[in-house]
Image (cartoon, rainbow, N blue to C red; front, side):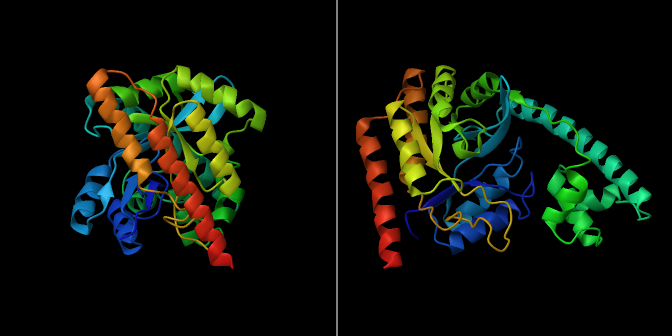
Length: 318
């Protein structure tokens, strides 16, 4: 086992392909010390992940990725970590989202079937898609069924030809409510993959500062959208604002040239210190009732880990 982690994995309980048990088992095979299953608006897979983690000796941190909106931005994702996944308020809020999501998926399925009818093709069956999903149906499950039927060559083709043209509006959490929901469940709230937020570089810091005023706890500095320089820049921003640093690959499924568990696109080396910071943040809250900035001592440790990872990558290329 190494001292690396991956805190952003998706299972079949949202838009991933593997089960939580398969994800944790693969993390164990890769030698990861800790993982988090961060499904979209869903915590149903955490129990399975925890049980598998115990048998595989991999630490599993409770996780979730909430779809949030702020002013004109609806492409913002918020990660929650270390919360009680059985918290009634959290479960109720996510159940409401799941019900809306199920209705949305049915509307998309109807749209696709009308398109298939126009093409002279047999419709997709709800029962087949549900069996493939193993739970709440998402767009990737519809895409998988389209590929299985031979209506699309691959997932990308299914989205391009059917899912995107026949999409339905998505529901979002107001970000302040999402942060409060995570806090009330005993966790900490982290801004997911900042490079994917549709703002210019100069507007990212003011945006994060605004979220900090709402209670944001951290930034996913180690992410598959950042190179080493971008990772260091996000760590610097986090430290300047007193935020914790986390990281994850955002893995959904294995595909050629795609994201890989534990290493993203090949440059991620996420230190266990990220998990330690989550625990530290939550422990301070339990002690004081306030989400306090992390210490400069912890900041130095994570920065040294980042530098060491870069040196290791450079040495591997020599």
